[in-house]
Length: 241
Ligand SMILES: O=C(CO)COP(=O)(O)O
Image (cartoon, rainbow, N blue to C red; front, top):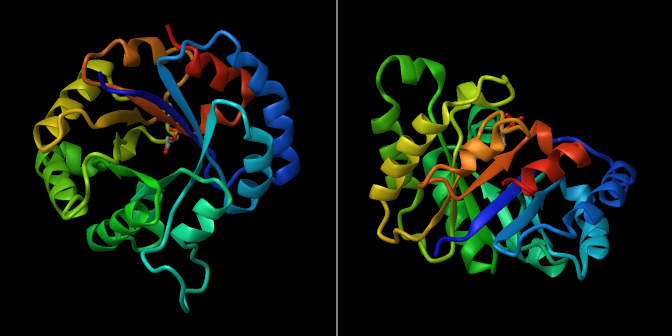
């Protein structure tokens, strides 16, 4: 059975005070959440310490939004795997389209980060997905196959999550049709050596579309941006039917 995983990606939102306030209003909503699903919050680096303490003993796991490939070194602005695992972080998003677009992340650096995440005991969440221009040009399939081949080289597929995030659906309210997301995720699965990898959909996931998304046979979870910032909307998503 593939694991169901709902992850929030807070991006560059929430101070420590705001993060604590979120938890006050969120954790009690998990009382009746079915055991079959895992819940992750991927938060800014500055929130990790305080959330690690507050989430101790809860069923919510902690994730970072990036991780460097070296254990330590002269890499201003970066963070290493051991720095994350030391404070209880279990997951790290790698290769998010915002990193690829604004911070020059390439398939090669994404691959290095994935391998390092695993080496230091983290489970990486690899993001792949096409732009509107690439979709309109009919390049979706070839792009995703290429991102997977390069990103997953020498990566252990027993310890990775993949998120299909079409760039045109991120932050736009323009969700990919559930059936189309299911088709692309099926394509992703066909490229893997381990068919049991958890594959999420991300891009304008909201309380009003999560049930349809999670009803698709290939989709094992969601990577949620904007709707994970508000306790009640993230609670509704986590408690999908
Ligand atoms: O980028 C995303 C999650 O990583 C998706 O963001 P939104 O849910 O805000 O569209």
